[in-house]
Image (cartoon, rainbow, N blue to C red; front, side):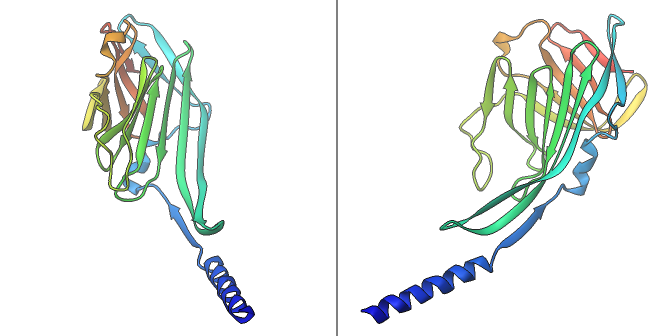
Length: 220
């Protein structure tokens, strides 16, 4: 009996050592085609937006974070895999208290990198590969689809839409690669100054938005 216990213990130790020697490291970086959604601005840089009434406001880059977040997993308290995932976040604040932010998070198949954009409390998460809005946040409520190993579930209905345009012109300036978001959820709760449309251009960020009352604000 003692011999059996000894042999079993030996195999347990060998298996433990084998697990320690098989840690898989993975780095998940952005798809090169998606990197341009991050703006070219540096801390303190600014751009100007003006509405239909001629009121202008300056948006200044006040936060710019780029790093690889670490995560790990395993079995029996033993780490078998580690990963580092690329992430970039930018926040612009305006002279009138408006806030515009965007972030890009790298992902692995079957998912694509996803971009999260938020303006004055209206935010959405969009998978750039699967062309799917899977999360909406707002002052009126929150919607989030279930994420499985194979994709996004159909348990939550999100009516808001995203179109990625090859180009879009604002004030005679043409921008290549523009994401156009239209809010269609929680409509009964909107107020006059709820942001219902957002236009974001590669490299330049926010170029236009429209309030529920029809007031339009454009990049100068």
